Amino acid sequence: MLLLAAVGCKENDIAFYNEAPRLEYVTVASCTFNDKDYLNAYIADTKTTEKECKVTAQLIGRLLTEPMTFCIKGEQAKKSDFEVTASFKNPYTFPVSAATCEASVMVTCPTKEYASPYQGTTKTGVLEITSDTSNPAHQFGPGREENLVCSLNVTLQIHPDNWDSDFWLTYSTAKYIFMMETFKTTLDNIEKTQANQRTLRTAYSVYLDEHENEPLLDDEGNPLTIEDFPLN
Image (cartoon, rainbow, N blue to C red; front, top):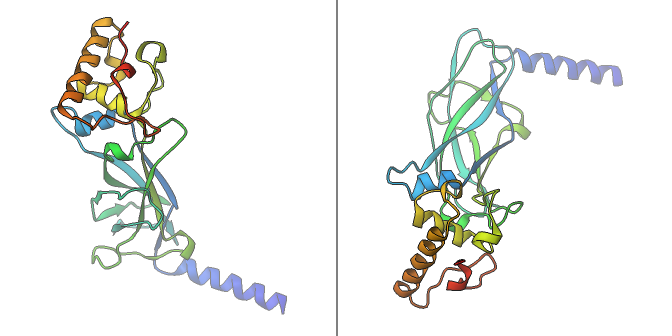
């Protein structure tokens, strides 16, 4: 009986791989936006809100002897900290003599309320990528059940590596975003001068005057006061 079962499995495997080409996906992909991406998306004069991310499709069956096309679509995962906005460049072309193919997905940068507050902590939006079999340009059959979905994990991690707490005082995400909005650049390009400290402090004083009872909040939910902005 064991011998018959082994022979049956072997014949089924051979039949599977002799079928028309099938497509599945590497089950996890990442797309991380940093402070420069956020600046370009929401602060810079010429805005670039999207970033190209990659999803890897992999072939099940014989290598192709001629190119075939495939299409993908996205659906919000049930467990997701925020909604991911993405667009696809359907159809994609799977090349000959290749076992895998990367598909470009254009993902929109998350807005500031979805920024991860600290390095090592994340808020993650998850988009589940699958084959769009309803598109007539999709020429592949489905692969293995466990590999039909790629979870595209999207994060906004703007915390800079070189934050100087002695000069800029305690870090907070809202404070850093306000700095970027004030100086129209990221921390790398903000000189540590008393003039820039005064500029930042004055800008926040004006902000408080214009947004009475609506101070910016730090990463613990506490209001930022003028004393949170340095003046040496």
